[in-house]
Length: 164
Picture 1 (tube, helix red, strand yellow):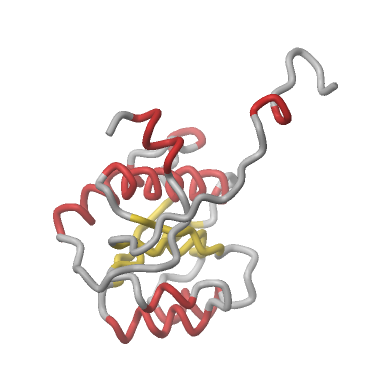
Picture 2 (cartoon, rainbow, N blue to C red):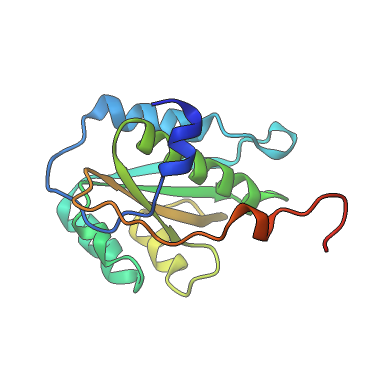
């Protein structure tokens, strides 16, 4: 699939088949996250891959908007040390994970982290070092449904020279 098709067809997937995802594909997805742009090339992100059913269930229980994490065969947790642009850097890494998953024909869904009340509990559950922040939890797996949400038309959101 070419890059433009990948970008235009990526959707948030919340229903997964129990089919495992190979370690090589997961490593490639994380490698794409690792290569995301970061401010001043600080590279503050770390990635925790969770494949164990018990740990995925525990993460799902902590995140009210992420119960599907328990059903996805993989959850990639994006952490960042406390850098000036940790949220921007972690967000670009997360977007790369989503796009890489799509490029591999997989579904994924971003579950928020930094501003959520469960963030500190996720960090504790994963034994993250002090000073790290939770950016996101990304469920990854083989989709059992391809949603087609309505998107705003380009003419509605595109402005030339000024916001008019």
